[in-house]
Length: 56
Image (cartoon, rainbow, N blue to C red; front, side):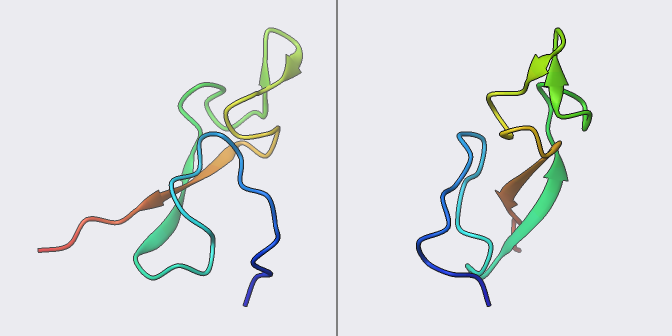
């Protein structure tokens, strides 16, 4: 389980341990972690964002 004090990246919708959340590739950097040679500000350079998973 993740620590509650772990900072979220701007593109994250919820903490990693929240129910109904999964990883997705960052749309801003396409999973590379960089935009125009600089660290992606959406994913914080990880290339991944946390998004809510839709339910029925």
